[in-house]
Image (cartoon, rainbow, N blue to C red; front, side, top):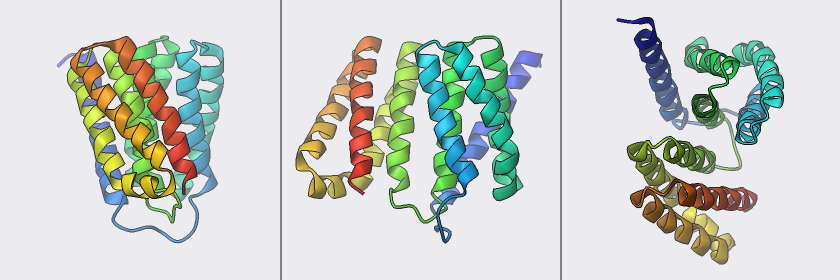
Length: 219
């Protein structure tokens, strides 16, 4: 097996471990708010994606350095089994940023975000994990479409629907107009993915992510 193939296998294994941890995370909340290191990691992972979207490599590297420093603090508050997969994806992101591999770096940063949402779900959160996964899936849809991975884009669109199903009733009760708009955008996204229009997917998913911010404020 070539070195490159080995790297892909290792990364895939790490992602699978993250997914397993995220699934287990919803079994029961822990008392209290999430630790500061987790909140910091969440913000940095999202900020790095915004920097890469703007092709601001300098700022992305600056935030990555902060994320690396934060890893030690994260290891103190999370079980070793959970941080192992996170560390592999972080190391992959470090390598991709070093080589300025933008699409791969965006995907890795979003994998970190997905892991963090899973970690967050273990704590007593006001906003349910489904809202965090809406953010992750929306970005996944954009990244998959822009790299021509249409089956992955379709999976992301389906994940968006599944997670919104878990919070839609709440949103409708708080802001019926927002609920209608989100549902409309989900249908539009399905059509854009089916048409394989990366530009439309980005436009619709970006608008949907803005609405997810509003969904979060209903809690």
